[in-house]
Image 1 (cartoon, rainbow, N blue to C red):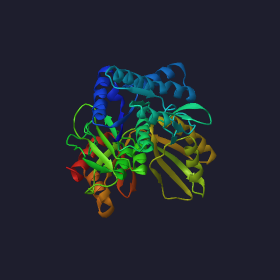
Image 2: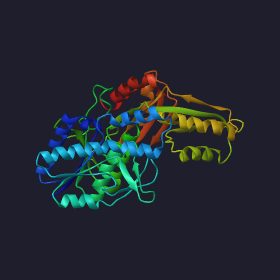
Image 3: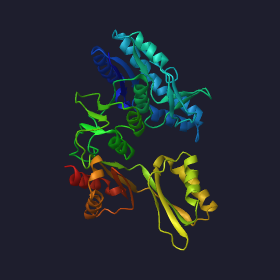
Image 4: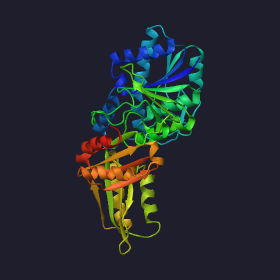
Length: 401
């Protein structure tokens, strides 16, 4: 008998009608002779609604209380799903993250999974139950507090549980058929990818492909857990994420992220340790810095540009104001009209000229590049946000279509 972990996203559990469809997916897996552990997200946009309620009452709500509040969303879903499965004659038990033994760091809002004991999950399975575990949440042993895992937390919960329990695979159910070569809402001829490597998927998730979160892919790669991404509402086989594929495409996908801001600190003294001090302050505040460019020094003065998520704008600006004074810089600038486009493919490792093709394609479409970053299997460019669709379509045509 195999163990399968199934995760259902917010759009898959948006209402009771959707929960009934999800229940049939679970029952189908159970009837195929598998033990099943299910990780549901909060229903629809309920997490956003809870956040809005909190901000109606406080401009800066307590992180501890926000974790208590937001963890309720997944608990509601797991209970309703378990109630429905039991009503259909399938034994089911729901467990919160702490009851399931998900031990995390103490940081509220962005905790990291440190260990999964899983005793009550195994006990539930041994009694023939379908075990439903609330995603997105855990428990810190030292503080004895409930924590939440931040963006992508339910995906991470599911794959981490699969690893801890020795599952055969983890199935991530969503409202799309799998992983596409580009966002099909933007690029009309985007194609479904049958198989993709962890390495490629990690780059795609990190650069804007929202169908699967980077943290979950990292867990899959670390513990070699096959991940299948597919739709709750169709019977398509989806996309398999695994260690290696039969062929390595030069470019497997084109991604974009229009939820980043470009920040620039001007007139910074070009001295040893300055960059470390500045980015250390950003790190201590939990800022997720992505692309970084430092200009060539002129008269021992330089400019530092970097990108960070739009929802961290206020925190970054607070640090920039302080850094301008502490580092004796000339000032700072914030550019919100940017987007990042990327091409990803394992075949880049052995293919020369890929970056120049990307730059030439953007240039021939009158798209200016303001920042560039690369990895062995990725090239990313920051461009003007208004050019995003044109950039994606032209790059997809150049490398994939």
